[in-house]
Structure formats: structure tokens, C-alpha cells
Image (cartoon, rainbow, N blue to C red):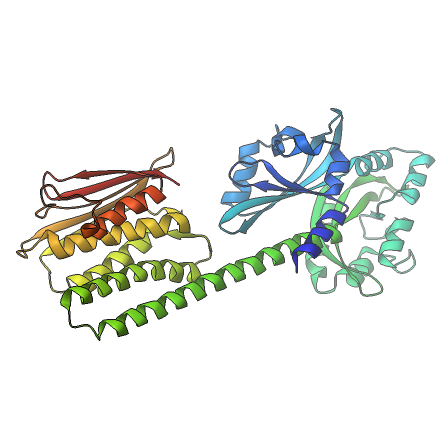
Amino acid sequence: MNESLFQTVFEQASEGIVLIDGASRYLLEANKAFVELLGYPEELMFSMTLNDFVDLSAVGIERLYDQVLIRNEPYIGEVKCRRSDSTLIDAELRLNLLHFGGKELFCAFIRDVTMYRHVEKGLLETGGRFRQAVFSAPLPIMIHSEDGAVVMINGEWTRRTGYSFRDIPTIDDWVEKAFGAERASVLEKLGFLHKTGTSCTYDDLPVTTRSGEKLAWNLCSAPAGSLPDERRLFITMATDVTASKRVENDLKSSIHEKETMLREVHHRAKNNMQVIMSLLNLQSRYLNNPEAQEFFKESQERVRAMVLIHEMLCNSSNEARIDFNEYGRSLVGGLISAYSPNQSNLQVEMRISRVMVSLETAVPCGLIIHELVSNSLKHGFPDVRSGTITIDFDRDEAGLYTLVVGDNGIGLSNGLDRNMPGTLGLSLVNTLAKQLQGVVEFTCTSGTVCKITFRE
């Protein structure tokens, strides 16, 4: 589904729809139906959160978001919505979690059910005017008895489904025609209603019309008095959510297409970098200078550090962030194999938290680890004595990242300028740290320790 078609469906939906940023909880996008329903001006709307126009005191805003985030279940419930003129309306809120480009978005569907509730209240009272309200109501309505007999359906029910009162004399007839393979579960729910007399709601039921069209309905059933023979009556009212479900599915489809495209981008980037590695390897075979060959090998390993990131993103369910613990261990394992495969007396201690980082953070951090660890393996232990290389990576509660790479080897030479061209690796560390807008600290009292702090 292309962008323009999605935007058209989004704007033409009859229900109010808003997209909410998962991190800041501010509104990102609102459709025309939402604006007309609540009346907030556009310049104010996008500085609002869900709590600004929905009364969630009974649910709790954080508990609501936690249900969707932690339990990965959509929230569906009735709430009070506050319009721009401070009046309150009854509304049904449906909140879903979406993932796109490594970001979490909430999609909220808001439907005005004020009329729905007024009709329900009226039908529970006696009097001819309420019977007339059933027939003229804009919602599909059925009244049925506890033994399953259909007492009445209104014109809207017939108009939407194609079934008249004669076609569905009993609940069993209606369920058989409308739900087919789902009939058993629907009958079980209605049986619970008749047995307990408790109001029930059923969401996203797949209803088949007489013409074979597939609809999605939300049903609400409640007690509605009794017949003269004392059989209990129940009223069932339906809301057609076919359009909103179509928008929801189209939104998911659009996001899936973009995720597939991102995964393909990472796959092609990985393949292109592997070609560069192969070319560097072929070119190095024509060199007789060991120092030049070493330069080519270092370049190959730097490219490999970036290839590993794109490879992980290709295989990840999150196309924009990777587990830095998994990445760091794979990266260091490759460096040891490349530079010190036989130095079993060297130990590597890694304390890398399982932090999900973006591509913009993973690439410079990976290259920094590559430069510092490879430098330690090549120069930190010239006499091949026992030694330890440590890598620490963590993020505190305030969002501050700390990367520490160190060894207990011979340390840096006295007076060595880390920014001089002759020390390319250490100069790269400074350049990459600036890219992260981080602060670099070197300590050379016992070996070499480099500490970099930054925020993502």
C-alpha cells in the first residue's frame, strides 16, 4: 500500500484516529474525524497527550500504557472524552502498539458512543417511545429472549446485514448465517449472557452478510426487562468497525512494507561491504611490504565491524536497533581470531549490558572497540606475557552511556600524540567520539584505559 493511499484511508475513516509517540506520549498525527469529534485546533493538538482529552482516572494512564507495552494486548474500554469546549462525551477507546523503524507508536481509535448509551438507557425503560427509538436508531439493534427467540430487529440491522426478521427467527439461525465457523464461540458467549444476565461486550466479530460481504462488528448485550410470560429479554446493539479495522490493517501493512524495505537496505549494505573486504584482500596479495599488508588487514577488520552490524540488523526483528552485548562479543571474538589466535595467556573480560542501541551509536562504538582492542592485541603485550583486556559498556537511568576499553599491558609511549597521523587508530578514536558528541579520557598509569561517555 503506497503512502498516498494510506493517507487517504486514514483521513476518510469515520472514527477518530491518532498516532502517539511511544517515548514522549505526544500526538504525532490525527485524522479529520478526530478533529471534528473533539474540536481542538491543530496548533494545540500536537502539544497534547492522551491524558489531556481522555479521562483515564479510573484506569490510570501509566497502567493503560503498561498493559499495551508489557502484556502486548490492545486496550479496549469506554471512557469520557473532553471536547475543546470542555463538554464530555461517552467514547470507546481502542489503543494498539505498533513498531516502525525501531520506534514504538501507539494507535488510538476513538468512537463516539454517546447516542449508543442513550438508546440503551431508553430501551431499559418502559413506553412506546423507546420501542420507536429502537426502530429508528442508527445502530443495528436486536432484542431476544433467554430461550434464544428473536423478538425484534430494527431496520438498521436489516439494512446492514440483508437479513429480515423472517430470516432469523432465533439466535441460532442468526449465528449460523452470520458467523459460520465461529458460531460455537459466539453461541458460548451468548449462553453466558442468558445464564448470568450480566452485560457483555464482544469485539471484532467477523460477520458475514446475506450477500457474502465480510464485516467486523463490536456487539454489546445487556438485560432489557422481560416478556409477559416472564421470559427475560436481552438487547444486543452492534457497531460496525469494518472501516477502522481496514485502516488498522492497512497501517500495519504499510509499516510492514517499510520494515521489509529497511531490511533490504541493510542486506545490500552488508553485501557491498563484503565486496569491499574481498577487494582489499585481493589487493593485499600483490603487496610485498609487510607494513602495507598490515594496513590492508586493519582496513578489512574495520569494514568487518560495520558488516557485522548490518548483518545483525538483517536478522533482527528490530530493523533500527541491535543488542550491543551480542554485537560486542562477536566483534571482539573476530578481532582475537584475526590478531592473536594463539595467545591463550591473554584474557578478555567483557561486561557489556544488554542495551539496544541505534545504528548511529553502534557503528562508532564498534569501530572504537575495534581500534582499542586491536591496538592492545598488537602492541600492548610485546613479550607475550599474561595480560587482561577489559571492555565495559553500560547506560545509566539518566540515559548516559559509558564505554571503557582497557588493558594492563605496557601502555602508550611517553609523549605520544594521539592526534598525529602516525597514530591513525587513536586519532580515529577521538574522531569517532566527537561523532558521538562524547568525552574521551585516557589513563595510562597501569596499562592503557580509554573511557568515553556520551548520550544517544
